[in-house]
Image (cartoon, rainbow, N blue to C red):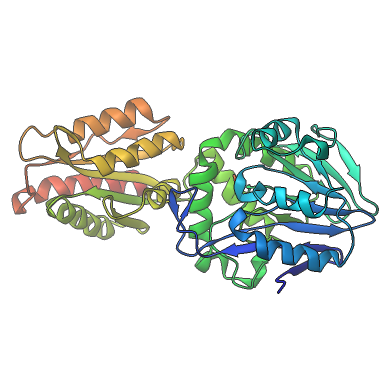
Length: 401
Ligand code: FEO
């Protein structure tokens, strides 16, 4: 049974949803699934844009055969050869042995490493190269490190479609709705889109900025990414989000509180802080337990908020391990331009505050730590309230100016 969507008169989405995969890249939980998007253009030549993960191959082949309707497949454009898009390529070559692959030179190198027969390779594509498939003429633009070094995107001048590879993608399966104007994006999609971007491409902000600058010069009518929704309206919205994320600018002024608590005392202090911040006029805030929240969510929220409170116990004379993991990912994903506030706890030899402060100051770019800190010995108690109040005032003042 095929499951396809018509995008324009001669362009089809033939992707597949995956709701069985628990961890994307075997790291990131995807409770709402993910889609592997693939597209077919029926011009004088037939052109397939990317394939899908091996686990989705059966549905993908049904879709492709349905849309081709007996025509042969002339070209396969591979924007990105990570196996979630390239694993089904072998099967395409078996079924359509005359197909020619269009990709960058780096992509061909990687495809060889993955064992693909080079007989199918066309001349490698370079920046600005064009190709005419009949009515449609496309231009290729390289986009290295968005998300791998071989990545390119394709702009179809005839219909204004940008095939954007991983850029502008999202976690979450498509539940019958392919286009951004068919969903309530702010309600149902923004969180998974942010979590996808920040964890998968977040490290490569500079390279995304380069791509955005190229995109600005094009008359884009539609964005077709490799995961998630196809954007055919309100393109400024999603372009602006990616501009902010890739410049590491917070989306909103507000406070993210991440606490690491063994027996609940640090959690109670974090909760009391959240109440005080609300009473002092901080409107946007989120509180997470570092032990029970997947770090991909913490990273996404770190890209969202301007201020981050690290509230953490001391463990083996160091930082509580789950908090250490979060800090490591902040650095790995290049989070910068944030203001931090530190709340430490330790029953003896309390070191977590000093260590977290040093980490932020030495390892994260353009991040500051508020001078006002809270240091807890086992539990805060009512005697600690003035210090907490002063801490909350300093944070609220920094947020609201
Ligand atoms: Fe969706 Fe980088 O692969």
